[in-house]
Image 1 (tube, rainbow, N blue to C red):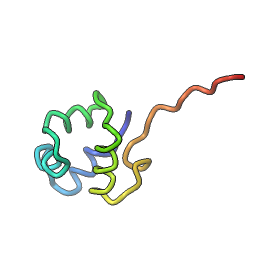
Image 2: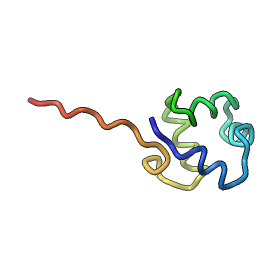
Image 3: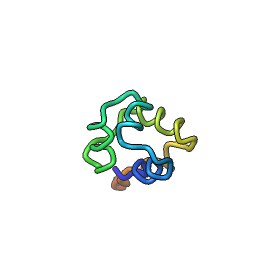
Image 4: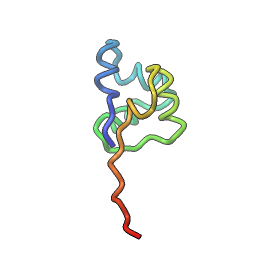
Length: 70
C-alpha cells in the first residue's frame, strides 16, 4: 500500500517519533508504514487522515483489486 506519510511528515519537519506520538503508535510502526511493509488498521488510517486533514483516499493508495468476471 502506497502512502504519503513520509512526505507529509517531512513538510511539517516531524520525525518518525513525532508522528508516532501524535498517532499513538511506535516509531517502528511509522517506519513500516512509510516503507509499505505494514498496512494500517482502519482506525489508524482514520486517525492519520484526521491529523493531516485529508480524506483517507488521498493519504493511502491501495493496490487496485482485480476485476472478477461473472
